Image 1: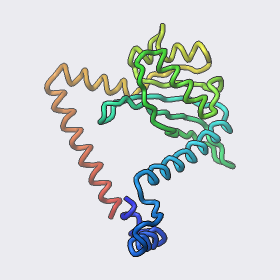
Image 2: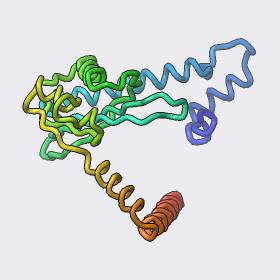
Image 3: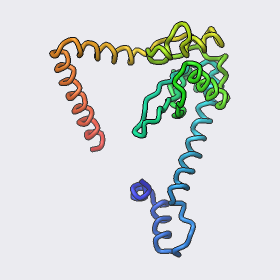
Image 4: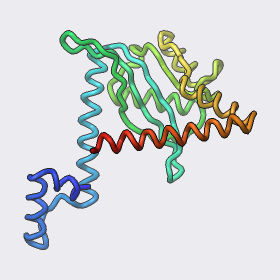
Length: 205
């Protein structure tokens, strides 16, 4: 990635040339550890900017969703939605903050993780006005789900099930009922993928 960027960045290209022609033992900042540190520092600065915008807006909504990665670790994404006011422009922003590794599967553990993550970012749960999760019982349960536990702390944080998850479940059930539905959805998926590839190639040109 660094070598690719160097083709378009003269400063980085000059640094790589100096490293290649210089001493064998020299500070190059190209080791995996240093690269990861750079990425972490940049990510932290982006998170700080987003959290500051959230604090300025005061009220916000939270969206948390998890999925296992290739190493079978459950990764939960943290997203906040808020109203950003910039001079005469007012718009709704939806910003990704980070991935969190979730080790616990219970509603108590997940809700505790969410509250801790918000607190670490300096975001007050008392200013939350909405929460959106998938339709799993552990998240959406009315008795002891994550949304219920957060609502008990802040009754103004209204829960709204994720419509994308609902649509996904509807498509899964529709496809399982009829083979014609399965074929129809499969064909449309292929068409959409090809369309996305075609438009991406057009933008690159």
